[in-house]
Length: 143
Image 1 (cartoon, rainbow, N blue to C red):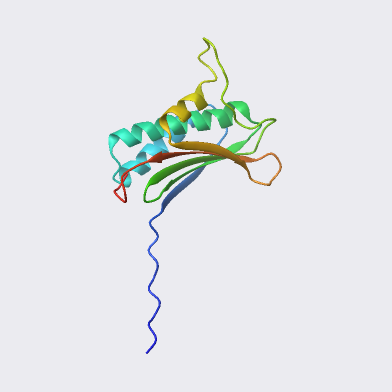
Image 2 (image 1 turned 45 degrees about the horizontal axis):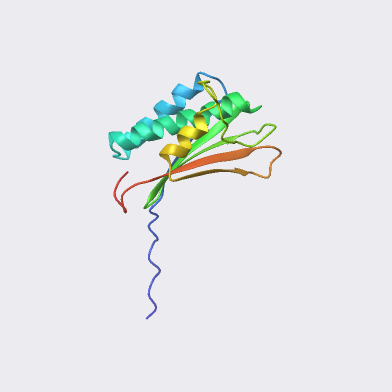
């Protein structure tokens, strides 16, 4: 007798939202991310870090691209939590800059300091890109 295939359990939890690329959307994106992580049972440390990373990635999409909107996604796997922001593109990809004494321009330095990995990928649709960052968390434990 043949065995019936078992339904696959997907260890990934996902949450995505789209907002206009306006300065006021940065705080809204941060709140939406924090609210979702609370629903997922994530602790305050990872929520604070995710809020910081979301703020930096969304700010970059709003300030440094020609986007009218952006999409932010949180994806929790067994060992990592990935934050990605898809924008409609701009003249150059994201890069870490030497900012000197300026307050502006430190976003990706902060992301690089608090995340285990980050990067950017072109989507293949014009100049649109996805900038992502990953945070490590417990082996299969809720974030």
